Length: 551
Image (cartoon, helix red, strand yellow):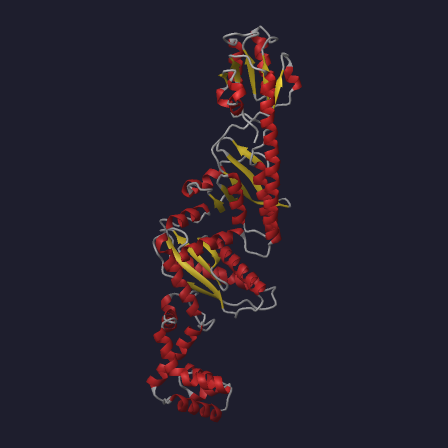
């Protein structure tokens, strides 16, 4: 970074001249690109901007207008400051007209009360400038190396943003076009201060060009996108600092390189979930694993445009009945599309929610309802819309769309309890997968709907339940395993048909004598009478428990 006027004044060689700032003290942070020594009154025509002009003033105009014109021309060309040495033309004070013109223009004007060797000043400042340029080159090389590696590795947006924040030493935020925070890194600062009222603050920052500095807020902003399609902004947040016109921000190259990496990675990984879904998934995971505090969840969700505080929160888990696909990439693609359909259904139903994959098989939602919204009506609207979207999306596919299982947890009144409603919805979804598809009037499941299956699912890890299954069905399971039989399946069919042997034989696609023979074998192996209601009830519960334990 180039030295500023203030930095130059602090050099030992300058301090020997007893420098005194007589005008433009508020603009000492201007960068100094070069030092130019001249006594010419029309020197402005030889300058390019960013120079610190040293003079004894011996040839400066004597009249007010001439002095004002001299200052104006220097300021218009963009000099960093003007240093006048006492002893040749001026001795104790500088002309008021000169001081007034410099103050009006905001041009730093410095008087040297003791004579200096200008060549010594030039050498010292030029050494700083050259060192700064070398440092910029080294920084540029480091930045390109770091972000090239991130691009090659296909780094996630959170990694790219973290690296930009680390190298800049400033908070960095990646937002979408709706000014909702996709990911951020506070760089050790207060996260609440960074994200509080983000959308409102961000909408007020609109610098010109793809990369621009907003002097009011102190934000450096660059667009993120490729091929003419911008999808977000990368923002470096800091306190406002004076930045002369046509002077690039010291972190502009770093921010642009970070934005380019984000855009490139998004093009490369089109088959992966959207940034919004990734961010939502991270928040949902943070709720379930306690890796985020309540205040962090609320703050980040608010910045995403999903206010959770002072709302009724309803956990929803979606699963698909179709069995898992062996091809992992195909399964990931299906889950990604399922999550996007769920997000579309939320928007279409005019609801607000966090939506993201919970695991490899399901999508989680945390719906935030206002005080005037009817919970059942909102869920019905969402469920109906989702089913229609799933059906429509499968029309061009080779296989019909699986019917989604929509499981809902009990509503809670605070972010602190959000984990409870999500866990309940997860348990309901797992239990509901065993329910027969298409046989329900209601469009979604709740805990009372899964009844015994739901209870057994909640107890599936209990050793006592597992012992019960082994005690009731162990001999039959062992027989099937040893002989490759299907006696457990015959027992299941018999009980599912309400102990109607004729109907069970038809369902098993067996003749009645063959089916009856299998039932007798089941009775003999288990030592039970299948005509007794209590025995059949115990076995039916054991079969349901076996399903729960095997999940």
